[in-house]
Image (cartoon, rainbow over all chains, first blue to last red; front, top):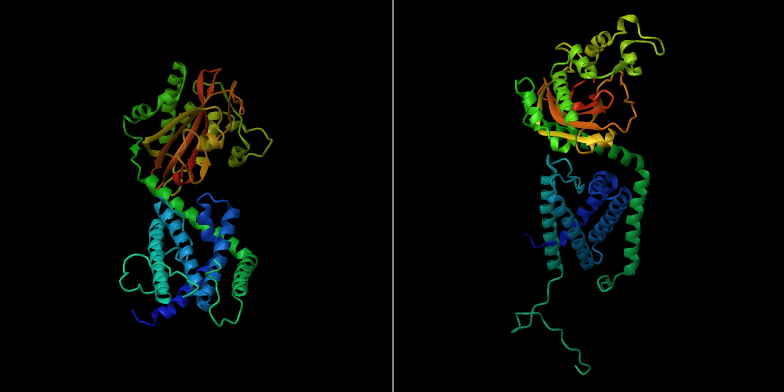
Length: 160
Length: 283
């Protein structure tokens, strides 16, 4: 993997979230009706999709502008974990509704396949977020002779 | 959280203000799009619903076509149908049970080979019945509303003989078939109900699902002691999957019979079939 790739990853992830947000902004129907198919009331489903749309746009902008990257990557991880949990639940259903994410609706003849593909895609995105985080915020090297176990925080002595 | 949003050194803008502005912009954009594209979103929703309906209908049609069907033309079909009937679900008197078996035989004969004579046997045999053409039948026969039925159609036999081909369709060019050719005995449902409301018929003990249903034409038979809204008369609901001459057309068929106490006989009441069966008849 090219060494400079990690520099572009936040922007790439940001564009991905912006794309997902813009897609839901223009086509909220599939995501809303997917929730409604799970007996979520229409008003709540609509509010949830609107909230997720705003969150994706906000997160996309943060990543694209590289604002508080650590916070943005944590937030992206949390959001992707929630999405992944939702997709896992959909994939367990015999006839799941479409998740409505990233405009992939219609590629698959079978909604279950679509949910499983989306699950795999989300795992890859989570891995990309983790990889980017590790490259941008590497852990401090362990002191020599203490390779195993967590590093204890140094005591703060006023005389030090 | 505050620890996560600390400013990097040299940042020109207060961190929280930037986050607030970005969040506000995202929320504003979302709400604005919701308002501006309201009509477009409604149209999209309708489109998704239509596509979902078509998809679900195709799935149901495919599953109904794959069921194991038994031809009505088989010599032992009626005994097999009666044997497959869950009589335990019908707490009937011995007389009611015996009469129901008789009526089911006539019913199956009518569905397999609808003829005016067979239909009249089913509708009037052992029953004190009179025929008052319904407004729908009058329209079908081209009879002006309010005027008496012409002499040539006054007899039930004549009226039914004229009406049946018109309702059921005849000839190979007609896309509607006049008969059922096979029934799935594995999914034969029967039940006793106090009403035959759509909920009782389609979501009750005999539920088999449906896409869109059509009701068979009732020419207007009325029975002694059995008024239309008589809730006291017990009703037997029967449902099964059936197929017509076209093997691609299969789906659920529901019918109900009401107990006419005065005659000690079951009177045909309603017949519904799924649009996918493509079956229209008199009932």
